[in-house]
Structures are given as C-alpha cells and as structure tokens.
Length: 269
Picture 1: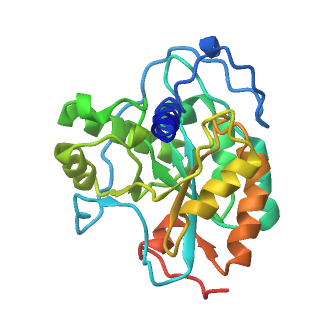
Picture 2: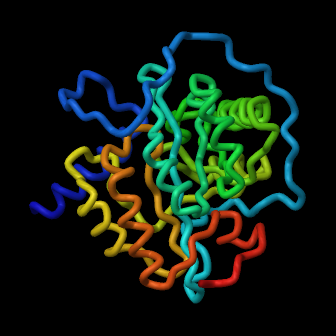
C-alpha cells in the first residue's frame, strides 16, 4: 500500500509540474533566473504552419531502437497561464559544459514570457525544439479545433523567436486520446512521450534520488523526461550525475530526432 501511495504522489507531482502555485506551502529555490512578469496579452496571430509530408503516424513514440545504445535527454519548458514558470539556467549550463545534445519541449506561453531565454537556447546547435502546446491544457478536454490552435500558436511563437519550426510534439502532462493523436499527426508532428521518468517535479527528490530513478528505468533507446523551467527542483544538481552515469554505461546521448530516425545518428561512443 505504501508503494502504491508513493506512486500516486509521484504521478500527481508530475501532472502539476507546470502549474505549481506559490500557495503550495513549499519554499524551494531551484537554480533558475526569475521568470518574466506575467501579464495577459493578446495571443499571436495564427499563420499557416508548414506541415511535413508524409504525415507522421497517429501514435505515441516512447523510445527509440532498443538494440542500440542511444539515449535522449528531454526537458519540458512549460507553464500554466495563471502560474508562470522560470528558467533553470543551471540545467543549461551543465548541458553546455558537457557539450551534449538535448531536446527542449517548448510551451508557447512560456516562450512568450521568456523570449530572450528561448533565443539563447536556439543559438546552441546541440539543442533542438519540440512543441509542448500553448497553455499546457488537458488535450482530452479540448475540441480538435482547440488542439490545433494550441499547436499552431506555439509553432508561430517558436518561429517568430527563432526562425525554426519543430517536428516533435509532447502532450501536456502526457494526456491524450485517439482524436488527440490524429490532430497532432495532421499538423506534421510526431507525438513524443518517454519511458524513463526522473521524478524531478517532486521537491523531495534530491540529486541522488533522481539518479536512482534513471538507473532504474533507462535502457537502449530511452527518452528521459526532465524539466528546465524551474519545476525540476534538483535537476541541475542531478544532471552531471546522470550524464556521467549514462556515459559510463556506454550510452551515446542524442536528440529525439536522431533517436527516432528523423536525422542521422552519430557514431556510438
């Protein structure tokens, strides 16, 4: 029963990782710069998004090839419109120091309040971007039209700030139904989930615990989910340990696009 209760608590913390409010009663200071002041502004004008041809399959991708020693580090950059998130510069510093690739799933509203940080991430050639919706809403409660707007507005914001479009999409909180997957695919995006959960939204998960979660779940082809928006309370502390462990075990770090065959893989280390 205790194990089941702990699992339910971990799931709850993950689902609220982009919506944690200052009223939570937990005082934690992750290694992040202050988030931009949140003010309600008009949403960006929706323009035509360049769809990929052929259309990706309407299915979830949780990992890459299980027979090859490649792993992708991913970081969610999201926020609820009512509770802005931050920017964990410590995470970015570690990635740059180790010179390793990473995939950032960008929330549209997060980019709106963090334009300079978005541009700085785009300047690093080791980093790629995925779409993480505009408002981090539960897509199972939205119409197909609303889902399309969430995707398109985020793509437009990404293009306005970086001149880039994404090919990848991560569902807010991982929630979906068959209709959701069809809409995402119709927008030319591959739906990327994960198979290795670090638990970093839990403020009680210190660096050693996060490393332990990676050790317990990682395998060939794994997609590891973490947060770079200040909601991963000890992510920056854990990341060097995680990278060292993965390298020691013979894994080569790649982007998600490389992992799923959209781009060539580097030679395994």
